[in-house]
Image (cartoon, rainbow, N blue to C red; front, top):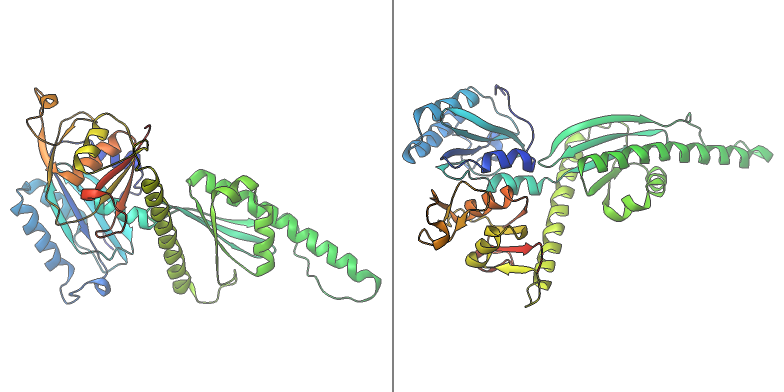
Length: 376
């Protein structure tokens, strides 16, 4: 793929720098794999021309369109899609989206349209993969968004010892030596895996290996790690067997299922906190009010591309208004934006987390917008 200098990373600090901007921003999402397109006969140049027409229709300046075009074209088919954000002829952020299958999307508006990127990141949560055997393991760390940040091969301190059956009085001694060796090696793997989980903030540990190696690894993990993370077993082993595509598909599925479970748990908590003394608010007016006072710990927002409701925002992190004539907005240079995008902007700029919900999801907050607050 002939794409120049794609920036890696979609952490909150990176997204916050884009969200904080108040000028119109071109937000583009495009897939490069023709196999995932509803109309695969349309090659990338034709699809990109449609994106340009959309941006131009929304009054994007020629310099910004040219900068995006320079970054993307020419390109060859790839499983990596792109999220591109540009303004005033400058590329603000270019994020690789591995396995992106969504429709091409383009907006030129303020604030930036970050919801699809947040949804993609949410469905590709940070995780650590340990492909282990009784001699060591390969530990692969993936950050939010499925970006592989680190891979290390861990070799245990003990040489491999086979637990065989030599017979006679020496058999128990050989068996004990083998078990001790495997346990020492598993302890080394567990130390590296725990360190990777802590450094990445991942709450999902995927483990591949034979039953005994996996058992020893889990036994050696610190109790605090076992309590804090979800451990999922995937089939396969450490020896190359040509099943990498199948393994990648299983990893992606496990990550999506973990994300769905986290969303379900969050909605359960939201329901529990929705009483009079609880910490949940819902509906556009109540949520914007909580955002304006910096109370929001977690924003829940439904990603409905047809939702064109507006809110107004100023240059400050928490300057958000449901109407342009609100007394608090007097004297503030405000501008309109899509309600969901404005809510996301304020959430990111006030250090709140964002949970994206699919349209029609049961137990979603009223009017597609809600929050868990920092205090009641």
